[in-house]
Length: 327
Image 1 (cartoon, rainbow, N blue to C red):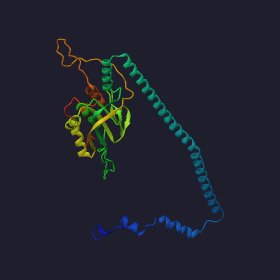
Image 2: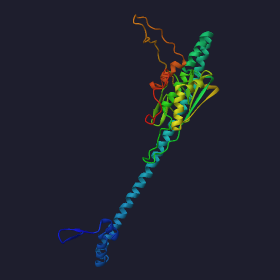
Image 3: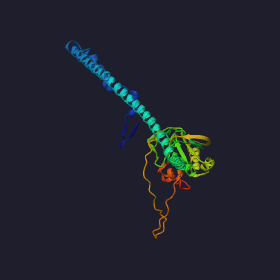
Image 4: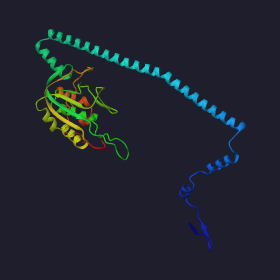
């Protein structure tokens, strides 16, 4: 290729880099080394011995380092195995202790129940049993509904390679389900066997969902005991519509069905707290305070079961609808 370089002169350009690379693929240093070797010949005498000795020493040093590293790895392996075995044994012992303590707590609870029935009148015992059932202290049995949620598909974005997690069930979805059941008249609720109380929490920790700080896994079963209209009222309410939208938009598996008879176990690690009646915010300014509201099973457990304003059972409609950004 050429270009004008003044009157009567032409400038000649050299070939571009790619053409030169394909024409002479070898580095010029290789040709120089081959020419020098052909000119000087193979090293002999002292020079050859020095090169051979240096090569041998290098190989010996590398072999020594590999042997030392291997022996160190083998020496550390029993210590790691021993530590792992100790941790496994410790977990198993703690689980066995927990089972024994739970069995002892059940026996003591049965003794307390027997003494209460002996000491109290029939009306007092009946009222006590109703309060225990409402607060989750004792197991309950009856008809109700079961809401089942399961993760939807989680495809991988072909551009970024990231997995889309919008189809995973989240803590707020379980919050909507439980609050919707409370609002529909549920008297007792359990999530994967974990009984909810007035102090229960449903929270997300990474990819795990915790109910009262206990992990629950998919499929999520929210079982409630309540009136015969529980399924219809839940499906027609805001929670049922919200979960239907999740199922249609993100492929989350959602189903609700009636159950004729189900038993919900008592809550574990129930922390008792004092409760004082609060003054009504709508009380007249003359100093006459409103009467304390009577909290039934649904109203007492619903607000604290989720601690989420968007899923407050007192609200007639959710504050948000499922969206890609919110998930």
